Length: 154
Image (cartoon, rainbow, N blue to C red; front, top):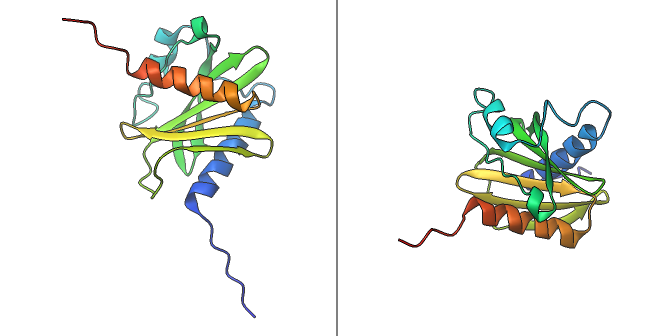
């Protein structure tokens, strides 16, 4: 008898993102550039990635920018933008859209961590943390809102 296991690429990439989050929590692995200044973190990624990840300061909304680093998700180099909510770390992985058949958003728990996934403007976003599901949703909503600020009246 032969058993064939099919691996969903989305599941594999999600598991890799959670593993990258876990590795980042080890001493000395959280950031390559440590600063709460978004105008330092964003240019640090220049020349290191084939995309320009958005780096947004959400400190006023309760999510402090800690810094950034390079990581690997799904065989691609990704930006990891690191935030803190109280004593909890949020890793926001941003990479070029990998062209898989993913659609919509993912909201789930993997290995005890809350995971949120969405795509926008040709980029994949994976937010991972041990904060509550509601707080991670709040982070994602505030990040998305900051990506598209309301236009000033003309």
